[in-house]
Amino acid sequence: MESLRENLQLFTRRFGLLNASCCESCCGEQVSLVQSHILFEIRRVGNPAMVQVADELGVDLTTFSRQIRTLEGRKLLIRQVSPEDRRVNLLRLTSEGERVLDQIDRYMAGKIEQIFSFMSPFERESVIRSLALLNEAVAKAGSCCTITAEKEVACCK
Image 1 (cartoon, rainbow, N blue to C red):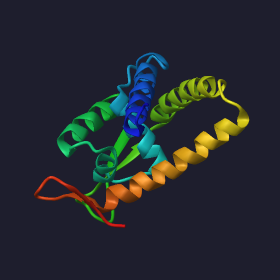
Image 2 (cartoon, rainbow, N blue to C red):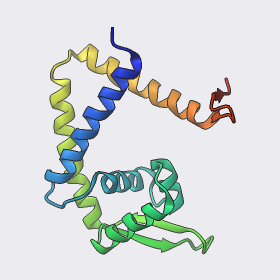
Image 3 (tube, rainbow, N blue to C red):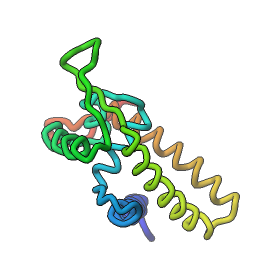
């Protein structure tokens, strides 16, 4: 019998590959998977701080800064110093960044619709509700779990 972890690993890998193939071919812009995630997160949050996006994506700040410079050079985003705190850099999509992200969105929407075409309306709704519940639980667990000195996971309840 397949384990829950195995199913999650397979889903993550398969969906990740779908995302990766999109970014290489869907918009002709040669946007990497990481760059696609950065653009998506900037739009989702709306003018976030650089460190906020790096933390959300789990990318170290040095690597993240290189990606930001690349996206700036391609005129997909703008980095601005926060007027409230000059130590903070805020990120904003340009109209070109919005255009590229819209192309990625259309490609992914088509692929997701293709996946859902193999399910009944009830199954689709169940998957959507279940993913929302799973995302909530993962967020809660991630915010209160730590690894002890004995390399065991300790979580609050």
